[in-house]
Amino acid sequence: VHHAASRRALAAEAARFVPELSADDLEPAFAGVRAQALARDGGLVDDFVFSEAGGALHVRNAPSPAATACLAIAREIVDRLERLSRR
Image (tube, rainbow, N blue to C red; front, top):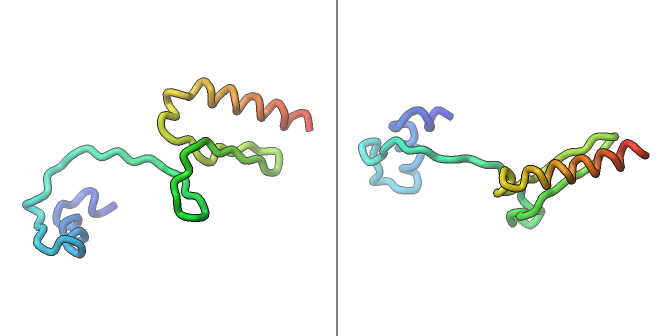
C-alpha cells in the first residue's frame, strides 16, 4: 500500500526489476484492481464459481463482465438459495 501512495517507494520496489528506473520516470495514473480466482494449476478461472457450505452460499468468483451479467448472477443466486432452503 505504501508504494501506491509514494512514487519514491514504488520506484525503489520496481528497481529490483528495472534498475535504471527512478521516481522521476513515474507519473500518477488510474489503475483498476479486480479479484481473479486461480485454479489449482495456477491458471485463471474464467467462469463463475459458487459453493455451498453450512447452509450458506458463496460466490467465489465473478469474473468480468460481472456487472454486465449482474441480473443473471442474481437469478442464479436466488435459484441456488431456494434449493438450499428446501433441504
